[in-house]
Amino acid sequence: MAEPKNDDFLDDITEAEAEELSAQTDEIDDVDLELDSLRAERDELKDRFMRALADAENARKRGDKARREAEQYGGSKLARDMLPVYDNMKRAIESAGDEQREVSAALIEGVELTMRALLGVFEKHGMEIIAPEVGDRFDPQVHEAMFEAPVPGTKAGDIIQVSAEGFMLHDRLLRPAQVGVSSTPAS
Image 1 (cartoon, one colour):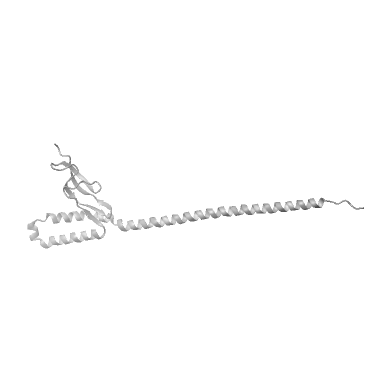
Image 2 (image 1 turned 180 degrees about the horizontal axis):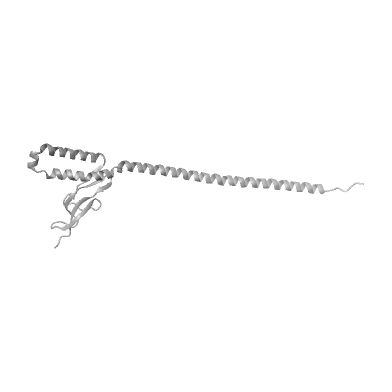
């Protein structure tokens, strides 16, 4: 007689296939998780790298700007300290009368030559004289009002006297021109 067939082995095969499929799915999930983790790490490192590059570029630009400013304005303290020398030489030249010019012509000529040399150095290093004239308008950006006085025939804000010239170093004010300014004349 024939023995009944045992179909249990088919169930075992199905279970084995299911287990193998589950193991492969777990492996794929693990690989996908690891791949996602690596992608996230790569993106983070790329972002950090780009930020570091941007920081380096910004530092280079700041350094270039600081270097340019040091070249242009590094001597501003010395230039500011030289302004009283200019003022004194100018006063000395202006105070020499005709008699003194005849008696001490060589000395006065030497002082004038020294003054021209000083002005040449100022120009060479980017210093400009701010020389307002009587009748010009007062500009608080480059002038310093030393006093106000009502003067007939002038408008409020007109320069009525120049006490000292001012100086610019490139585009920065070293010393404002010191001026007297007209106030509104009394009627």
